Each structure stands twice: as structure tokens, then as C-alpha cells.
Length: 202
Image (cartoon, rainbow, N blue to C red; front, side, top):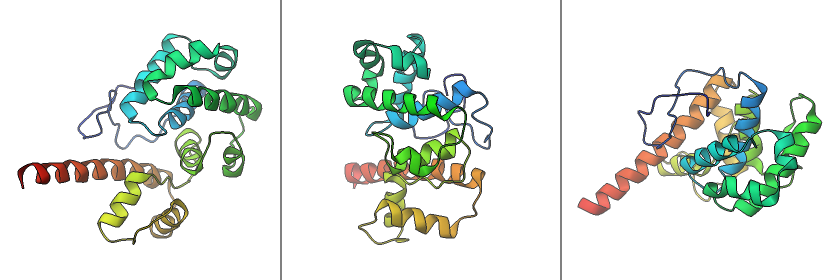
């Protein structure tokens, strides 16, 4: 998050770093909404690009539901341009901002999130796990890559099957689910880096 200066001992390239062992976020409503926006903006892009977009939104005073809904298309798209697909993502942020405001502080169900335009299973699960501290397993391409690479699952592996596989084998715990997701991302990036090194020198 923008307000958190973490450490970066990893390969993920995060600008603010990773804060291992700290599962207290979000601590404010503003942080909750920021996490939700990050979950949407990270679709089909690297997290470093998302952080640039979040910084731009904050600088333009657009990192709040009312501000996003009131902003012009041009202003919103300009702020989130670093995240890619900025026109589609601007529409997704508007749809989510309206949904978020209507929640009135309630925890959204997975089904309700999936009904919002532009929110798929991974984004919905990320919002529930990281923004609302619900024990919702998050699966992404990195998780699937690791599970298949190490022979835990046979490809092709879809989202639902990977989610079920992990849920059946891990304790249903907020800390476990959050840490597991972070470690899968890191491990997959190291696998890819190692593969590139072998192809370069092998």
C-alpha cells in the first residue's frame, strides 16, 4: 500500500516492498478501497505498473469511490494508464466504486463481487482475502504454474480445480492464505528467472 514502506528482499520488484508476517492490513477504510482498486488494476499487468497507477490516482485525489465516480473519463484514464488497458479498467473502477459505495461498509459475498462488471474469480477472491480479511483462497497464473511444475496437479488446470486443491490441503486461516499467495508468486518468479538463466548459459 502507498502508506506502507515494506522491505523488498524478493524477486517481485515491488516498489514498496513485502511485509512478511504482517496481516493487519487494511487498517483504514481508505486502505481497504486502495487494495480493491489494486486488485482490479493488476489484471494482465505487473504489480510495479499497478503501484505507479495507484500513486497517480492518489496524486490526482482520485483514490476514493466518490472521486472515481465524479472524475472525467480523461482524468481517470490518464491516472491509470501505467497499468495498461486503461479504458477498460477505468470502466471497471467506476463499476466497482458504485458497488463499494452501495455496500455501506458490509462485507461483500463472492457471488456479489462476481456480479460486478469486470470482476472475475481471481479479482473477487483477492478483494475478499486482502481487503476484507475473509478466508478466500486466491489462485493466479503463478499458483497454477507452480502446482503443475512440481507435479502436484496435471495440466490443464483451471481456476476452480486449483482453488479446490489448495483449500483441501491448507489450514483455513487468513495468515496461511495470504502468505501462501505471496509465496506462490515469489516462487513462480524465481522458477522463471532460473529457466531464463539455464536457457542463457545451458
